[in-house]
Length: 337
Ligand code: P6P
Image (cartoon, rainbow, N blue to C red):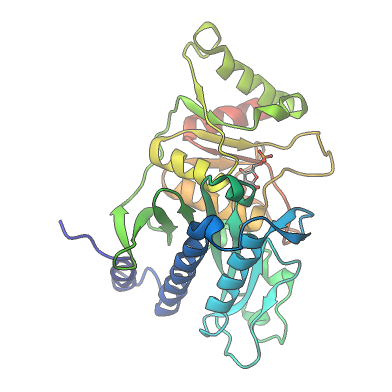
């Protein structure tokens, strides 16, 4: 069976009842090209002087890797000239990135974590890029500067979301609101080729992902849930579970999308001021849209992540996502207190 490319897939989405506009198709194609360039830089590893720390911290107060900065720059440069964006926001930048005056502005807002899991770069473990597309509010797009406020839209308003996983293969996983589809980079032709249509997260699972070293700081519902998984056959769940934790959200979510599982980065009391570790706008929201489009669920423990009304561009949120029946069980434990 001859496989179709990402461009052919997007043209079909544009033709089939106009699921996406020509401009949104163009945006996704530009992001895909940037992802190829990032994957190329990541794939060179120690062959170039791009490993190690950049020597600064990002807005999150996290040590910035050289490849964090390289990936961020690739996405900015790829997207600022096309006339499809009103502005961009990134984990690596405190303020929204304005489109240079020499270029026209468009109707979309692009948000991204340019290199998620970059602490794994130097040990050659899979990392990824996560992106989210919103429409710029009518009134804001004509403003000289697009401020943070324009981005503060609930995740349910995303027009598209996707991630790249730079693993054994470079894969691009995408939703434009009509299912989740995976494309694999054919390094010989340079094209992303459709390799899995309509990915589905099994409603049940025997595998969970959480950084267990934080157990003593978890809230009681999460402690109860994980203790029951660890108890396995001899506990209330009556069956054994397996654990995986890559330390790279994209890799963990891709595994869950492929074979099921539940991923948790809950709020913990390690730093009571923090609502969680992961960022809502460019990690939790895009991943939650993808998971829900694949039949899974995504919750803070107290509410659907896609319903969270953002108050800050870089705000953090507890994340519990994956196989629906397990996510609902964790949410029920939060309701029970
Ligand atoms: P920890 C990577 O820094 C990241 O944001 C996610 O990709 C990953 O799931 C998580 O943090 C890992 O956090 O505390 O286990 O290092």
